[in-house]
Image (cartoon, rainbow, N blue to C red):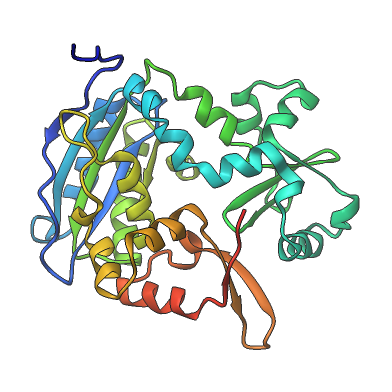
Length: 313
């Protein structure tokens, strides 16, 4: 007897066009945050794209899908996508490396060993806030720090790690769908960021955003080649709910051609923290997603080749 399905299948509006066959193009995911109005935001995003000069020749929509909340929950997509941030939000100070502790102390001018660095889930209990209150609580720029892809927000005597994670997971309900778009483009780095700026302008004009800083509350986009793979792992499906092969993503194929195995690529995605030697010979740490932001495929390959170690969390 066929097993009864417990979730809805994805709705594929624009089927994925298949792997990009040009060395000059890349596929950038744009997916809408659960709390956003999908249809209104999709329309605004496309209006923003149409404001870019010569966009028809340089940007193509090659995938558009609605992924149901119950489907995402069943597969654990959101938790898996934010796996490293979730770990830090749960364990806080315990996961900090010595390098992270040093950067923390230098920035906040307090001894890391003495500081009350806590994960966001513990902060909810200690501060008596709900998930959205913690996420939305405004602090000055001096009270915010990003280390290795993890955000630290100072609230009173507490230093809270990844205050956005409880809200993101809370909004990920069975009833909350996510719209996913993939733009195939010849634009890289700052050129594609200009496209994002056009999208943001339309979102502001139509009242979907109230400030430029809010755009990350409404949509996410792949900020580098390794994020393209991460986004494909979570959000690239056919209409039957089957995951499309990662070989559909050009950068994944690029890494295979360079000699990496699928297991090695997966290890970079799941354990993204790398160590490097700086010009003074000292060790620095950076997330693979952070250090390859806005880089080309070749530049990203050179970066990971220059890493001296991978930090396991």
